[in-house]
Image (cartoon, rainbow over all chains, first blue to last red; front, side, top):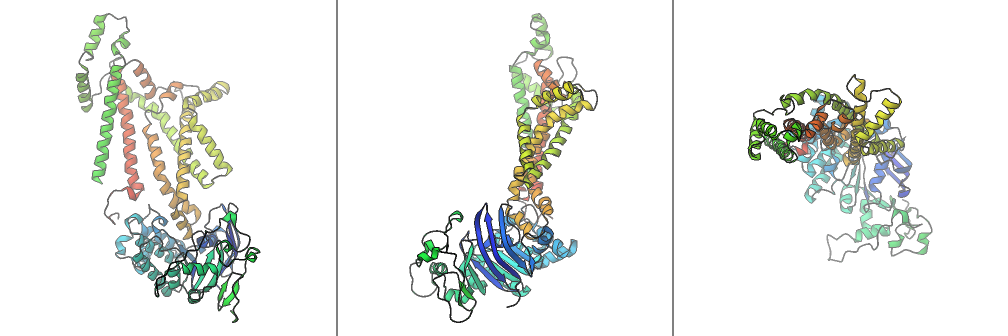
Length: 322
Length: 312
């Protein structure tokens, strides 16, 4: 495997002493697309906010996040300011509130150009126009002068993407980029992200609670539950042979596109509260395969196929080496 | 935009009209100027002559009509006491009042806003708590209590500063502090909560995520948004430039508009009181109007239905 672009090891985050992330290990290779799925509150976004030092001061962060060998956790602000937007860019769920309401959208994109590429004035404006064109904002010459509230949600997300591209990042973290948008716009934005990833060769981390979206966009998927990654796999293998009971439950809750109609199966119970984590596997209280051993300790990863591993003591290890 | 401005100006004029009318009614109902000026045991003929000379024997609606048409012609009447034009009496006092209220406003803004910003940026720190304690104390202690306290300490005990009057620039210090500290406290609290609100917004995280250094995030992204609620409060303070000193002027025997008003009210010197009220309400209404227009400048969302892309 090529040297990872980003390497996260044992990343732990707690808010006011309540654990939100309980040891995340994750590598992102240059140019690859990784999906991060899980219910809201499982720590998908927190992982990347922590990696970039964007969590509020009330959060305690431990572990390691390296960008090509450079440690980012607790790095100096000047180091982080170069990385944020310049090497790792991030876009967020609700584009309407993620853009500054009192600044023209063109100005907001130009700011990233000034910070990361030293472009000002006419050169910056020309580049903003090019970026708007690249992300498919029509009539860019006029639109760079308007405010976020004068644009639709989809257009605002395109502005966010243009802003993220402005610094020519090596990794784009898209945090639920389509959740707040209409279905038709969702597809357009996902197409755009896929096209941009191919054009620029940047890596993409797609955070979503929508398995379908992730499957479509990403070669590799990590499933998160209660602050840990419980299964990691190539997309096809995950959908064909989900191994962790939680992943199986997620897939069983999705309707089939082909075959007879069946009753969708909900996972019983709810995610345990951070202050009430079971000692062993966090999914055990909702799991129909749980045994007393599940509570004994945090299950480690078991290799179950090529590049496919699941954190469950009940899965059978694969005979083929991973 | 023109419609917006016309609407606001119209409303401002209506407000002034209402204030003037209200003042007229209350002053006419609350006592007989003739008795106040001439003393109650003056001969009835003298009282009658006084009333006749000032038009006070007309029916009240006629008095109001005369008074109102006079105002429209810029004629604000004469003082009962010395017969000089009321406007001249009031105008003479304006510089003295501004001598107190302008530095007090500068103190409020110059102390309150930076303190509020600093407190918000260092939330829950010792300095934040100190600023907030000071702010609460600042606006719960009435200015006259603070004024008397300052006089007691700095004039009576220490003898550093004069206790009243208008002799030198040093006379300004105590009244300005008594007026300014409370306002600074109010502004500090408002600015702090406005900043905290803004700093929690997603676009602040976006700015950080694109690599904007924190001091620029604060200056370029947070402050312009936090300015919107803060401007409202500053606007109110500008509005009280004329009337805000009534109590403090009395405490420090300062010859300003406020003290003139106290004297004029107790003497039922109608023209003077009405002139002051007109001045005070015009200041308040003007500053509110400016605030309304400033909202549009500060917040593009409030610019009404400007056509998209029209702003370049």
